[in-house]
Length: 109
Length: 226
Image (tube, rainbow over all chains, first blue to last red; front, top):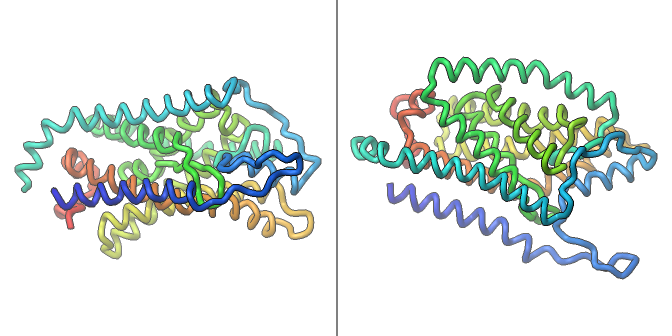
């Protein structure tokens, strides 16, 4: 079990590293024409719409979202809410199983 | 990864929605069967859904200078089979569409196809292949999750290239453009998703080996143990 825990910690650290490395190595791009700094780490979806505009400039989206989060702060609130709901359930699940499973695991060892 | 609202021509939007429909019906049926036959697995099904919920909410920076998010669909696909993940992935996508304006109703069919059908299918395929060649279970899960994540975005690139072919180079040029953005961005994220899925699998193995046995994940007392 100890080896397994170390494995999990190692994998988790690798995930953290994989997330941090881009923040360090990606250099901010040259200034835009209007002198403003181009934004880094925007969503890939937004960039895809730029490619679409480049491929077919005459295309107009024919439907727009029914509800837009009123600011990026509100959007991040909703995203963190989504993650919290999921993580909360997973935590509850493992917590509620930990007691019963311990005896089972011990029997296995 | 989700195609933004309105950014698929009507024909494509309808086409992908229709293509999704049979998988959705089969998926609902699969969930119904699984929960009636083995009601004790309901919580585990919830965990698979929750895992997708968490992972698809995490927008992670990538080496290309863009942000994207993992999908988390491989866990449920390996545990319950690919069809079960279709309705679950659809719920996550609907949540993000309605509340976050991330993705869209008109592009929901296409997004379900890439994230909730192709991803889980790939995961399931890799998992069974790995089992067949007796690959170490941890490695198998890692590959299944990473490739499911990556192929989800390749599918998105395919869908966009199909709808917006390049004026001179046609489909292929356009596909390369979209996949350079999506798939390249996704590579480090896919690796992360692989690790995260193995971690939760290890935890399930520790706390829920009985339920995993009920799903025939560990045959012949096979364990993630090294």
